Image 1 (cartoon, rainbow, N blue to C red):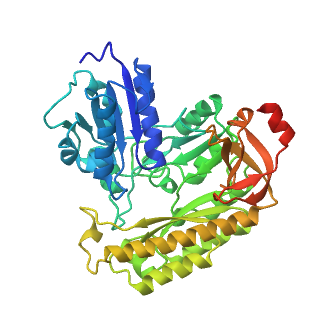
Image 2: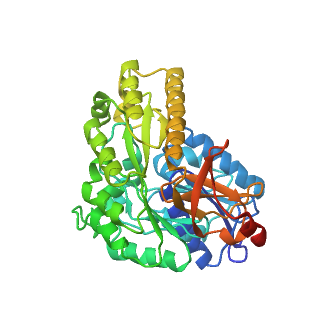
Length: 449
């Protein structure tokens, strides 16, 4: 196959915002080298699938998207990158149709591997280093795929949570320089994007490894203080941040900022102190409760999201009810509920008293119901408020959708002139589909339709 004359590449991303940022950066490198980026369902010469190891069915999802690529072009080159590729390279190489597997260190050099790559009927070519070698930082941000941009500021993690494979997939904690992050933010703003989401594996640990060493040269507070001065970006949103790394000064800066929005996503994982210790988390429920209270004290309308795991080894019904009641008592806005699943090479995988799968699923369902109740209760408190809405481009059956600064999902009749615009509107009613309607002038809508 002649990759010089046939240059179309398609991309699919699984998992987190960090993966989206990295896929977008890799895609730009290919387009800068002469490739045309096309949809994943289109015929292309190269299909790049960025995988996730957090999802329970990483292998099944990977195989599904390999089949999608081969359906679009049976002769297309299929390249697998990402966390799953780093953790299970040989397993992936045996998937029929996969041609190349690149680990954490190699994925950003995909272009060099494509030069002489040919479609194979045998096992794929694997290039995967030991994770200890992944001690450098590659800046990334997503652009063009969404209304908002995901800006990578940090990678890797030095925490040793007993259930987690992320340190094995992404390596040690390391950071971009403040100068580079600010420059990337300026580039994003110049492209007309209104919102940046800061992302990483453990962004509160920002500053460690900033100049290739293990010390903290700067702090997360210094980072967001610098970003707060960048002109042209109307919104900056902080993605998931550990409760022990979210200090009062950071919360106060968000409260006073005209750019940082009142939305926090703070992993909890369990409302039982016994289980938090078994998980080797770096806080207990008292600290978590203090963080939530501080946020609500200075930002009463703030949206607070929570990650929680059910079915961790040794989680009794009493432990689960501790978690349920703790979450129910907090003024939080929604939950991301994960069902625990065993991961190779983690401490938790060999722990005793595994929770039966049906029980894990029951507990998951209970918390998802609680999440919906919490979200609706939060939305109810926002009715009658006038908030800023950033409208997205998609037209769904004549309606468009957007998010307020504090992450309420709203809708109105589609209006092309509103796409990627921020409008101040009153929230009026919670609709059956779980979104909120806003006040608008119907005459203006007809004029712009």
